[in-house]
Amino acid sequence: MKIVVLASGGIDSALMIQLFKNEGYEVLPLHINYNQLAENQEWKSCQALCKSFSLEPYKMDIPGFGSLPSGLTNNKLDIYKDAFLPTRNLTFITLAAAYAHSKACDSVAIGLLANPIFPDQTKEFIQKAEISISQSLGKPMKILAPLIDLDKRDILRLADEFNIPKITYYCHAGTDIPCGKCISCKERIAAEIALK
Image (cartoon, rainbow, N blue to C red):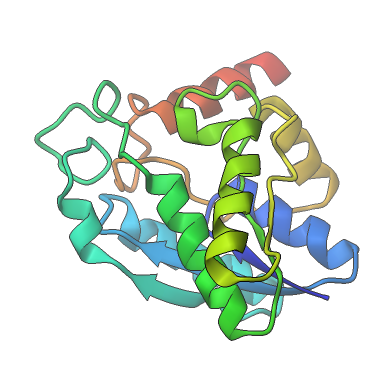
């Protein structure tokens, strides 16, 4: 069994890779560069994580997507208030499905968690995207979100349990020291405090 796992270089995608490997899947990690501020750090982390899993990530570049206004791609916008990048997750799973199709694979996984902030992070979104993508391919394509009932505290606990290497990256700003202001930093900090 093969599965394409969207791999940002963060702890969520690292945990997904571990879980699918444990289930006997052949994991095909896909990293998407959409000209995000954190791309250099994310790609470096993605490569290191995949190496620890004896996997080779495939990198797909869509730099034009990063020209859309978002705090994730434009450092002149607020990294927290302007974080929404329209159709980002739909674009990711569409590209992942296209890559999966090219590899004779019928499953894609994305690391969405509980407590969605944006409309493209819900179970309903995943269900409808699966229908649309399968229709566009003329064959079934499973879109999985195996972490969607877990929050960041659960992810951190499981990552420790599975000894996920502590080389993941999570800050949207792309700085060496996490900014502490972006959604990802705030989520991570709150989870770490709750676990103490």
